[in-house]
Image (cartoon, rainbow, N blue to C red; front, side, top):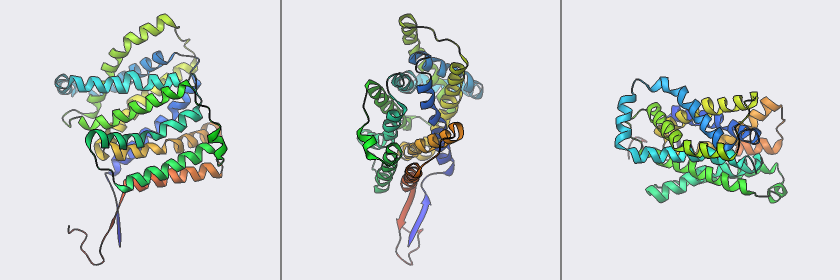
Length: 311
């Protein structure tokens, strides 16, 4: 017989899915505001708003969390540079020269990168179920992007923005993998406050240079709304949810949930833009969900009559 049970806590899975759903809108903001606000300034104000949004929730334990940060300053600085200074600066830069289809084609390979990096850096054993989930979900990504026509994949023209997207993908994979080094003595909110603050400090010189070289953005309604959504939603809330997901499930399993990003993007397109999902989109979404389930649901084959509690 077959015993099926959830690998990890339900709370971790819901947190990872929540973060991914929020991040689905980030690509829309990156593309829509590409010509209205320079990428590093967009990134800087996004994280400044995020810091202000979560600061009240972490003040109580910040003294203890700061002691952890001082003892592990190199680690938290690395996380700040990867996760705050570089990662979204790359995706906002990518939005200037590449389309959303290309970004949607590249970013969902993050879970596979997390699996590979976890294996290379920490020697983590990757189960056959996780690899099966990657294969199934990846086929779903191809189905979604191709729209049922593989000629569309062949016609994709890769631009310089795709290199920036790859950089963003690598940063996110490294951030997720290195999150396992975070001690449980520091709260998730406090950790994010410290990482956000340090990341802003490291970003400040780049912002000054960009302001001198380029321009100050016009404060249009679209720019303000995009920065607020990215700051409060994509940074403050989503990064806290992702920290919870990794704490509960680990980076590899959490990473598989990121494959659901195109599904959430398709749902947003339907709700916001009233776009109709075709057969290829439905099939692709189903494959992605099946791939995520295959990687996060553990299946054990048990001998008939054997007590499953015995080893």
